[in-house]
Length: 283
Image (cartoon, rainbow, N blue to C red; front, side):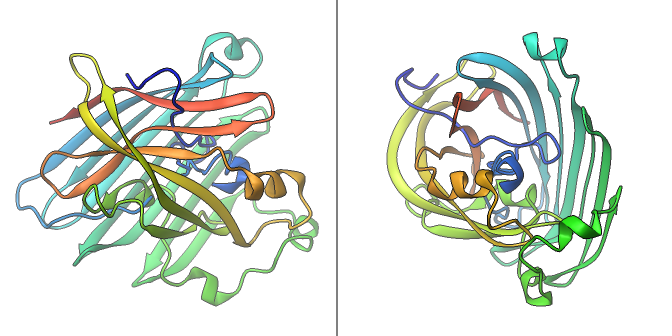
């Protein structure tokens, strides 16, 4: 495990688990989870990474999340799920599933379909977003957005849906340890367009268990930059823009040339929200 004095990963709202991040809490996190770009060398054999994350706030466990990433010479598929845990389940039993598919073109992913199905205290919400080439095509959100609420948001333009990544495809970065933190991730989550800006912070050592990763990791500082689809006057948005306590720990996925989030942290008003890999296993 990382040194206990150091932070961990970008939080993610259930509706976009692991999402190091994005805005809705940042996105509830970076929906967050926010929360990085997928791509890799075009391997002919399939590579699969299975990750189990624990999520805590102010030291108290609040959720568990699972992520599976498969890559071959034709493309990639990422699936994830999350559920509240611990004492939080006495008050809220939120759970959800998320998935993304796409293909690789050179050193860049071209997303094809992104979808999630989330149930929480606000009810059930589903989204399916299809891509056409390098732009977002059809977006189906159920229930649909309230037209009156949309009027209070920064308008989305067609240009905001070009050359973007969905939150899940953005979790994996085609890079080496020296370059992984030098990038800006353009993300559209079906409702909001925002950037996650990664900058180098430090290197560290991750000490996992028997089925976990052990070795050097690269720590990136993360900043959230809203562009459209958000409410500019919303306190949460302003808080995330000023938040200097976001970071993500990136570990190599075998010899694929991809770096993946193994841990991350987001400061909140009630304490740090930490996402930490309990299992990071290459198949």
